[in-house]
Amino acid sequence: MCHLVYRALREAGFRTGLYTSPHLVDVRERFIVNDRPIPPDAFAEWTAAILPVVEETGASFFEATTAIAFADLAARQADIAVVEVGLGGRLDATNVLTPLVAAITHIARDHTEYLGESLAGIAREKAGIAKAGRPLVVGDTDPEVLGEISSVASAAGAEVIVVPPDRDYDGALGLRGPHQRRNAAVAQAVLGALPDSFRVPEPAILRAFAQASIPGRFDQRGKWIFDVAHNPDGVAALLLTLREAKPPRPLHALVGILADKDWRTMLARLRDAADRIWLTNPPSAPADRRWDLAEVAKDAGSRFDVEPDFARGLEKVQAGAKSVLVTGSFHTVGDAMARMPGFAPLG
Image (tube, rainbow, N blue to C red; front, top):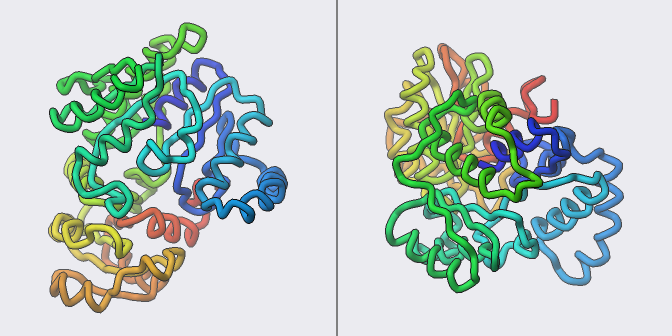
């Protein structure tokens, strides 16, 4: 959704910033102004400038990058910025902002170790981005979820704009998958809720949405398909998109999931999606978050092949395949892209 709003504002001629996370290959992917990432020298300078405060306060990596993002957006004189919340909302580092419009696309069980197991609890955390007198666009229409969001938003004094459940974007869309049509409808509502000074004409929205692409989100490059699906809901969306896209068979998949995700449910859903599936560990995954492939193999059964060495996994998955899917986490997709010339998001 963030990329669609960003792309439409760019198409309308605004000098537009975009802050997202996590990155795939290069941390500079997170900081964009008018399609250009933060220059390496500027990133180094901002890092050096805030390092003493980070060390003094014990700020997290995300808190530090958020500070750099806000400094960079100001230094590069963005007219307007699209800022993606990192985790939750209420206590997220980005929530120091008072946005022109806030949005919640969908509530799913993710980061449950921080946000809790219940969708209602997660909804309350995410609704913490609601601000007094500012619109909050909501795409999730589950009654329990919507009730929690509306309650928190009302207490904060925010105006809730609910995108009706039957409203999906029906124009040309560069992003693949039914879920992206819903995201586009939410993005369209966000654009419609902006103040008149930042209103985007309908023709610009149509052009922007038709041309939109996001690295790593059903990102099809030749026989390769990269998708960062990293929770059960993401895998469900990926499977729907695969059915819609119908890539040539045989389709092989390389899957690497972090240990703190619901990998059993994810593998159960992926089981029949490909003709052959290799399980691996992406090298960039933190050591304490890598899944135990011996345990995974024992639990998953013979339907999956295990290749702990990521480079060998990339070789094996291609043998005899007409299509190759790489999925399971941002680390898995990013590590694969980094090993393929011309595939990295920053070129």
